[in-house]
Length: 414
Ligand code: LLP
Image 1 (cartoon, rainbow, N blue to C red):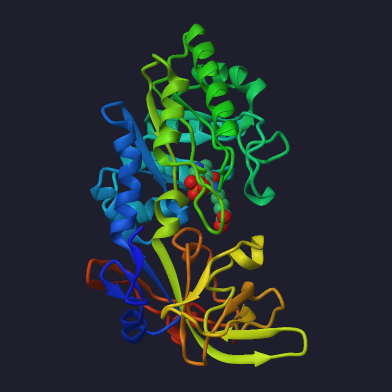
Image 2 (image 1 turned 120 degrees about the vertical axis):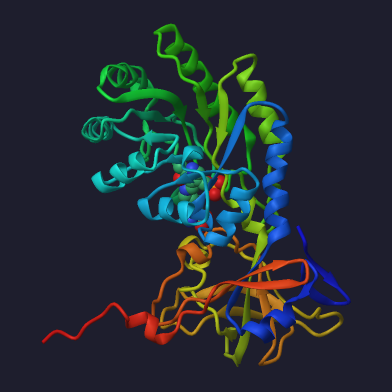
C-alpha cells in the first residue's frame, strides 16, 4: 500500500492528499496506480511459470484508466454485462482474455460477446446454454463455455455477498453439473472448455475456498473420464481485504492453495479477483461542512454521501475515516460521519473518535472497490471525479459530473 503518512500529512504515493483536495475539490475519489500494480503482480508472481490467467473483476472498479493499467500488465477480465465488455474494449483490454459471468445475459449481450470473440461464457443455467447455442449457430461461430458450478459451501461472509450456497441464485447445482455438461457437449456451436465457480466476496477464511477448489478439481476429473476435456478451471474471485481488523488471506497463500488443489493437473488456472486488486488502492476525500452537537450524538456533516459510497448504508460496512492531517495530542470527540442526503441511512461511519474543525478534509479509506461503481445520482448529486496518482502526478480519469449532465437525457413531455 502506498498511501502513507509523512510529516503528519496523508500522502497517496508522493502526492499530498491536501493538494489533491485543493486542486480537484471534494468529494473526490483518489487511486494509487502503484498500489493497483503491486496487488495484481502479487497474484502473477505467486503463479510464476504456471499457466494462469488473472481476470480482473471489472465490477469492482470499471474506470477505463484502471482497466488500461491492468491490461498493460497482461490482465484478463471478468465481465458481467455488455457495458463492461465495452469498457474493456475501450481501454484496450483483450477480449480473448475475457470471461463473461452473470445469471441474466441478454440476447444482445451474448451476440456482442460472440462477435468480439471472448474467451469463455461462464454459464449459469440450462436455458442460458440453449440461448448461447442458438445465437452462436446464427452467427456461425463456436461459443466456448464453462458452467458456473455452485459448490454449496458456506463462504462465511456477509449474506448479501455470499454466492456459493444452494439457496443462492448463482450457478448450477454441483450434483446437476455432469448432466448439463453432457447436454452442452452435444449442443450445436457449443464447446465446453472450462469449469467455473465463485462462492462469495470479502472472504477471509481459506477453508471454504479450499473446499470449493477441491470440488472443482474432482468434477474436472469426472468430466475427463466422460471424455469432456476442459482446458481451464476458473476459481472465481472473493479474496478479502483489511477494512478494520480482518486478517486477509495473502495472495501468495491463496495461489499456493490452488496449486495444491490442482496437483499435477495441467489445466490453465483462472481467477477473478476484484476487491483484492483495487480495494485498498483508493480513498474518498471529503470536506467537513458542519459540526453538529446533539443531546445524544455528535455529527460531522461532510460533502460526501451514500450516493458516493453506498457500502456503509447497504451492508453496514466499516470504512476507516481519518483526518488528512494527523490529530496528534488533540482532544477527541465521538461522532457519526453523515452526508447531506435526506435519509437516516446516509452515514459513512458511526461512533468514530476524531478531532476536526469545519473545513477540514477527511479521508475515507479502502474505497477503491465497489465505491465509484456503486455510486448514484440520488438527491440530484453529480458523481465525484476520480483522480489517479502516479508518483507525484495526478491525472483526472473521470471529471466531476455537472448538474447539466444529470438531466441531459431528460425531456419535458408536450
Ligand atoms: N467473479 C464473480 C462472478 C463475482 O460475482 C464477483 C463479485 C467477483 C468475481 C469479484 O469478487 P471480489 O474479488 O471483488 O470479491 N458490492 C459488494 C461486493 C459484491 C461482489 C459481487 N461479485 C461489496 O461492496 O462488498
